[in-house]
Length: 378
Image (tube, rainbow, N blue to C red; front, side, top):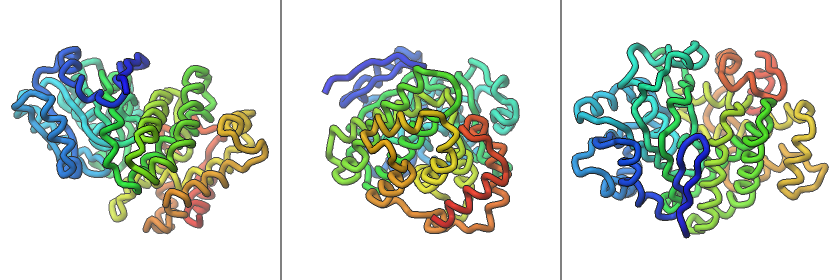
């Protein structure tokens, strides 16, 4: 399979064997002394060693990325960066290491607490082009973080916030589907549903961007047709490649904005007692938001049905619930170990989330309460 070069927001190297061009991309971005940001789980798989073999011999490594990145982890990684005399970041892993890598690139060039750079705190204008270069190497097919302009992390005061800026888009994305061949079925399913949710929500966003909309719809079709195959047989190289492309396309359309699914899953991800997976949260919430929005998106639901090749009267929410059952996703937030007592706080946080303004149906705190209650019931 050949490696294709794509220029859209950033430069993307896509295809099996793409990881081999890492030294070339280090030179292209001017990185001589990278910090490799990853996590302990990837250390155990051997993927970290595989990537380190393509980096300078004395490359510094930070592998303490938590499943939901935190400002504390960012500060710890920044210390490793400074101690190693680093001049750029290689972020290897799923959305968590890539988001943390972006935050480190910001942390080592910008002063003060990270909360001041959150978009809901007016941080967009505070992030400058001083951010050091990041090369993102995804090992899951879900977040699209390798081409996204956001870094999602829990800041010191406990809020999960989005740091958003064009300057945070990685300078290079190296998307090698072969790096996902060892991904377990459960994680394949959860990350895959994250990718599908991105495509659903960006396509349905009311922002006018036909180019991004076309990409989102194509990504949705690819993911829909191949997620079951990828979960059922992780060695299916075609399914792995199509899921990585669906994930990439979801990320390429973030500029349209997301919606209520992410407004809800972002604050839920900061519930430390459960530490829920972001993609799994999206899978559970998505059907309820599809039902909620269905009369507020013009002809877009019809266009989705046509693209997916389903009956013109099909209930998209029911189809997503059936998909969730097929790939082993939980049926409700309660099944994930979350408890309804958090709903009031989650509603307030969802209203403040940066994804809320681009939901097709205008949201209120009472509307979020209803969606949370439906998501807890399943």
